[in-house]
Amino acid sequence: MAIEWDRLGQPSFDRHVEALLYRMFDGSSGRVIAVNGRGGDGGIDVQVTADAGLRIFQLKYFPDGFPGSLKSRRTAIKKSFKRAMQHEPVEWTLVVPCTLTTSERTFVNNLANGQSVTVSVLDRTGLDGGFSEHADLEASFTRNQLREAARDFNQEQALLLGGNDLVDRVRALGSRADNIDTDWTWDFARRGESVIRTLRAKHPLAHEVSPITLRVTGRTGALGADLTAAITRTLGFGIAEEVTLPPTTVESLTIDGPAWLAETVTSPMVVWKPVPTAAGAGAPVEVTFLDTRGAVTARYAGRLNTIGSGGLGASIDADICGARMQMMLPFDNTAAATLRYSFDLEGREPAEAIKVLRLHQRLLLGGDLRVTINGQHGGSGQLPSTGTPDDLRQVERLLLYLADLEVVQHHCEAYFPAPLTYTAQERIDLRVARLLIEGRCVVYPYARTLSLTLNGQDDPSVRRFLSEEPLALRISPPDHEITIGARSLDIGSVHFFHTRLTIENAREAFAALRNGHGAGKKIVLRPDRGERFRVFLAGSNDDGQPLAPTPLGLDGLTEPT
Image 1: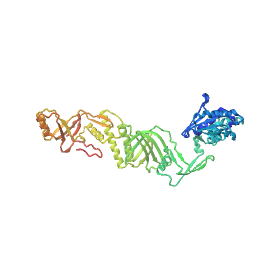
Image 2 (image 1 turned 45 degrees about the vertical axis):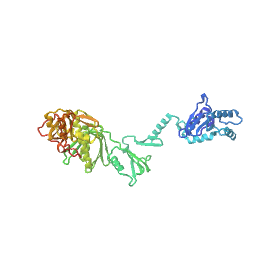
Image 3 (image 1 turned 30 degrees about the vertical axis):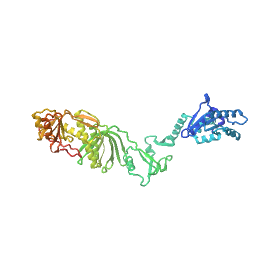
Image 4 (image 1 turned 90 degrees about the vertical axis):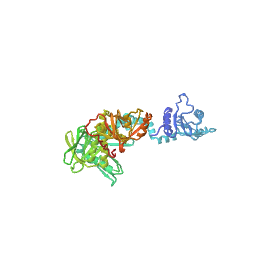
């Protein structure tokens, strides 16, 4: 329905034109400002500021034009034009709701005589064209006209005349959808240009009374390995995972059921997600690992999330020791079970992280397992071994690191999440600290030499110390700190010792001491045969055995001597 310009009146005309000019020019073409004329508009009703300069629009509501016989209207236009020229626009446009005659258009064009400005007209034809390019804008302005027409013909319900009308119409349309079938109905929603329909059962037995089947015909060779695996998980085992098949993989979708629903769609995008069984959510779950003789090797407890079932077997989704497990157990006991497993060690203290990692290790190794839910048998199967030798070696390294950190944290009574990145020295220091806490003696890899400074006192014991013969020495610093992930841990006083030390500059130091110049003289002690100092924790239990060094036992590290 076109806008009836000759029935609008000045205020409504202004609103129509201002809205159209905003659509036409605001944004990429320029900045539009409508001027409130209560204080005098200065010859500007609407201005558009763009890179090319200022453009002024003058709105005159003259539905029957401004013929020569109506001199007052032409005078008003001239005055507006003259005031506008004070702003030095590059273009001045007269906007009127009528179609101009030749005389009227000539009058407007002559306004530019002697002026460096382009003069133009936006009349009824141009306004109609502008609104046709912005149909939604025209529709919003013609609603009142339609409302009046609808009321005249008692057809108010044929239009959307307000927010409540929209709600009422949608609700009424839903009622119509509910009346199509006794067993099924459509729920629907609009998202932009898309309408989403959701098939809903009207009662629990709808699928038995009036079954509906979907047949998807795929394109040969279009499904990749990832999509095939996802389909197996959802349709085969009932995992509640959303799967999307793009049109490139689907030739057609056929819906078999009631006549109003049955159809075949070509090249559709198919999205489905099985509805998980909520019954039993939160129930205790236990995963038991068995050896080849059926004996229990490990048990891990957790809580059930969901259970599912498909054409190939059952699925159990559970949180076990803080990790997420999705187990797919085939109905065929001879077939191997499959598993999706995810975990995150970030933010976990060592003891908790060890449990998660031990479970991960069990799953990598594979083997027989049994699942119970709330004490009842939930399923069993055999997991294939998926861990490569390198995978298993990495797990062992991380487990040893976490175990070392747990011992040191307990000894220092300092608890914090395990740092998952560390330097080579931090790792060696942590290993050394654990062995020392356990009462072992170790070779400290970074203690190759020891420097001492003489105070200048000369006595026989010092002279004997400065002899060139190998000697035994023990040094006991008051504390020993290690650093892990920017945290310092003090394990206490330790003893550094070696039974065969030589002083590199013994003669030089002896001469300086004898001549009275020993004060401040530095001497360097080095273990014999290129060895390193041994170290043990002060206060360790004395088992009466010689202080034989315990190997560090770190994968990839050559044992220091």
